[in-house]
Image 1: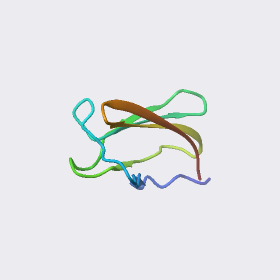
Image 2 (image 1 turned 135 degrees about the horizontal axis):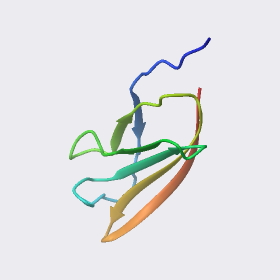
Image 3 (image 1 turned 180 degrees about the horizontal axis):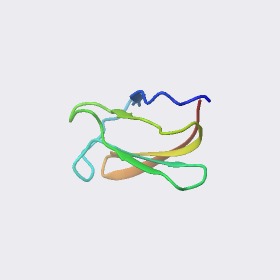
Length: 85
């Protein structure tokens, strides 16, 4: 039986030509759900000066991720789909 090793995963967002602004107390927010919409993950950046996030996944599969950042007073949401093995 294969088991997913619970390693910390870094999610890095390299933002070019813009400066992120604090939004709800952080420089960004990441929300992740699994393909069955049974697990919900919400993470903040690892520091007040970066757009790097860390999390872990309990099992392999497809995940939908939304990254939220605020620029010039407007919150922009970036959707992603990830396959965790």
